[in-house]
Image (tube, rainbow, N blue to C red; front, side, top):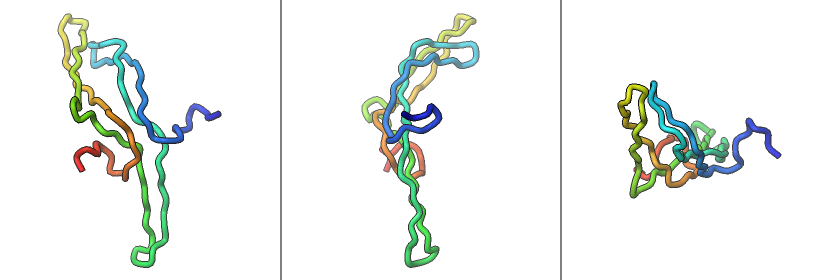
Length: 105
């Protein structure tokens, strides 16, 4: 059993239904994906300067190649609608800590 504050043991994709708000505009029950979990980090001693080598992996995301973003329209109290762009996460994996979308490399 894990306590609520501990990260997930491995980096993976989760899906959750959330309400999205921006100012006085909102859209309820939107399914969003995110990445969460632990990845390896370590420091090794090597035989040349600077003698230490840190390896740090982060739980990063890969956007859906077919449809990297989706467009939503929030309803505002004024009766207007507000466009919002959400990234579509295809998968999650551990990658060196530069962060961001791996598909560019």
